Image (tube, rainbow over all chains, first blue to last red; front, side, top):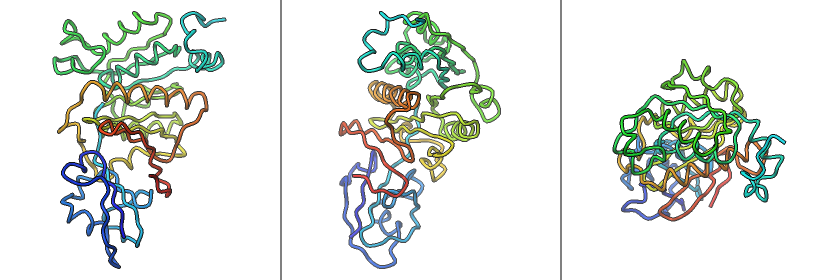
Length: 73
Length: 234
């Protein structure tokens, strides 16, 4: 099982936390594409609390956290 | 005793006299005197930071009135920097102010932040936020990063040993969610205030986290620290 935690605007029309069945070889793309989130929309992509990218291969039990960019001052 | 005891009397049970002296001896540079910058500058001046160096190039417009502390109806069209200086003089005349009218960029930032105890990010450009970190890290000056958009904000301490800001915009975004969501009053107010607290904790060698970022979700009234060093956070 993969746990996906969404933040800020990524929660619009989606749950805050989503669980996805693990499949060997799956990457972050296999998670974000069904959710309708584009890679370029993601500013922070954490896997198990470490900076990563959508192309990273996931493990069973991985916890993802996705944030959009926040840039105002 | 250089410090005016009565002025800071309500600080002392929380900010000790020794810490108050650290504030008085500090030179804090704030880049940007708008939304975040306004609340940051107000907090630093009231708290008794000895020297404030303010950097801005912009003028107030009507759409700033909803949130920017130094924006007034009479001040529309006037320099944000000049209004900030007037405000500091009105609330704490003991603060030494260095006001520099400049648009921060890669070339002028080293000179603008030279000699600072700490730098605070109140800019609204992701590109400048990243430059600011590169230059602060290079010069060994602690940076308090902050950014807002809609009901959300983030802040972080960036140190030469623990850079963080560039990694918060990893797909090269030029704009954030603020372009879509705007900025209501309370977001710069809350995040600007928290950034002042974080700056003091850095100056006092207090209790704060590095190697990650604080995310503030005002939809849920939550502040969480997200380590980016490999520890899963709830």
